[in-house]
Length: 196
Image 1: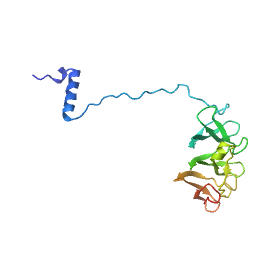
Image 2: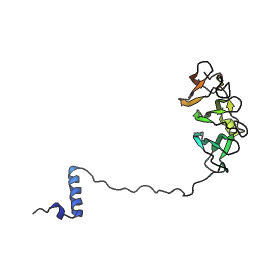
Image 3: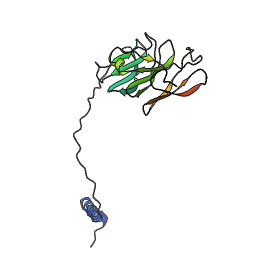
Image 4: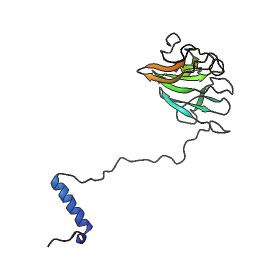
């Protein structure tokens, strides 16, 4: 006499299900142990860049094994920083707009090991900048290049306001104003002559 489903024990039901699956050539799912896992420390590494408020770090990018980002230390405004992931290895790379003014670097991009970004140096307005590896290792200084000139952009009559910096197969593409044609697509090889 066949037992009614409610009369079959849970273990017997599972055994029958496994047997049916095996007959159909289907293997039951099982658990495998994974490699050992380690929990991260519950106390994050904190680098307090701004003792008087939020440093608001943003725009993180890796170039040649170093992470670059933008932050405000409360003294120099929003400027370019670098870190190796330790408190001791986290420093402001360069004060593009010297003093308390913000250079506000944006659109950080790595093109062939060179860091490109747009920043305001306080004189020329928002322009295309680059940091070459040799400058990053010694006394860093952002190089302004490819000044494309625009008419009356904000308070800087010659600001090209580059945006959308993008690496396409090793070539820098971006949009900028030249004061004649409005916002257009540009490309650069990292030199003023090669910025068209």
